[in-house]
Length: 272
Image 1 (spheres, rainbow, N blue to C red):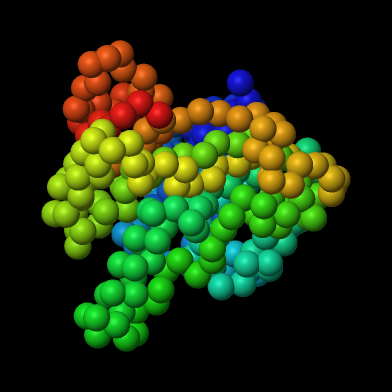
Image 2: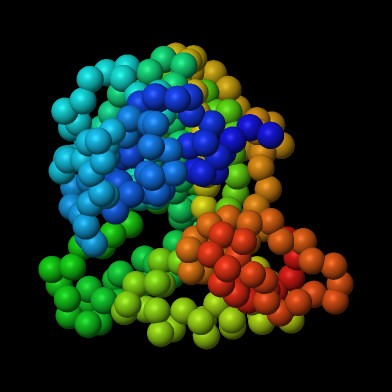
């Protein structure tokens, strides 16, 4: 199976590969897992702090729409849940492609705008801004993505899709101290609804895609999902660590599943 999830994509890089972590925050993955990689990370701000600076790691404050980085430089460019936050989408896409080597890989993850998860996140932002009178608060999700539009953004820039996944919501964004007290009861309730009625409000919440820079502008447009290359299945996402898992329990279905990455329990509705 082609690598598509972030840990797989990082593991697949050759020794000494140059990797860009675009909009890195504290680090999109544990950099220490691959100390042989030459990693450059940047963000426009660093809450709760930048990644640890190792001897093979460069970290700076920068704007994705205007990168002070050379063209055709990185073997892998990672953009992990970043593009939904930007205001200058086309310029940011231009830069992601520009700095990636010909033949290099772009890893991209974004929320699906029509999903319940993204709608809830937007509602929470508007509620905080207007109902709680925090008028200076920035609405975090500036962009809305559907599959057809997302693929078109990168196909026209010479990127060829190699693998993809439609990832359910884990609601790990609720680990924020302001929403953490609600997370357990909320996710338990969603799973109870799924189990009782079959209504899965967490389904297909995010797109995870990998592209190779080929210079070609043809390829599937996303209207026929079956025609897309490299489909990977994921059934559940941990609400604590946000990692992906495949959970296929036999009947009778359990009410909990344990994340293999962090060991924490999560509620279980129905098999996906």
